[in-house]
Image (cartoon, rainbow over all chains, first blue to last red; front, side, top):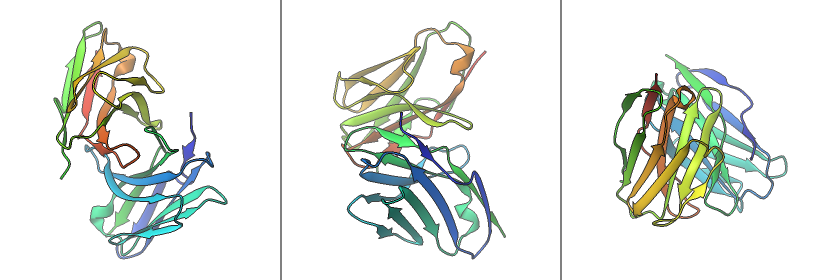
Length: 111
Length: 111
């Protein structure tokens, strides 16, 4: 199977600071990437996606960066809030129906 | 809003029982998926379906089967539950090559 990994399993940030969560992917043919947020006891929730013809995409307080040269994906959360505390994981897809998911990074926001 | 619902949030079954997990989506999505989520292993694909009566094995299909008789409904079946099938089960749906929307999950315990 594919290998989608995260550099850090846990991340703690002060409320109001920016958060950066990283993800490495192994398949250079992957062309679609998604970041999900999963709160305790809930299913994963879509945050933002990016296709391989872009290197940056912005949403509300979130930015995803894609570096195809080093096969790296990052999620930046601006002005992190307590409600952002959750597990975040990335998923990759290569022109098909199947996604491959990373194991996740647990983000804790310190008030 | 896309809604994916799962029949149970929590389920406790005995070893050897036949278990049915139901998933319904209301957005007319072609694709539906079943994953299991275990600590440290992330989401692993069990089966997916890209059309009514069609199914494809994922990475860990052993011990499971699926049924998709109607577009909106995708069922996961454990023919004879075993303790190593204790897990969180997540259903998702999507349009082809677009983000997946997840249900809230079913936490299954097999004793």
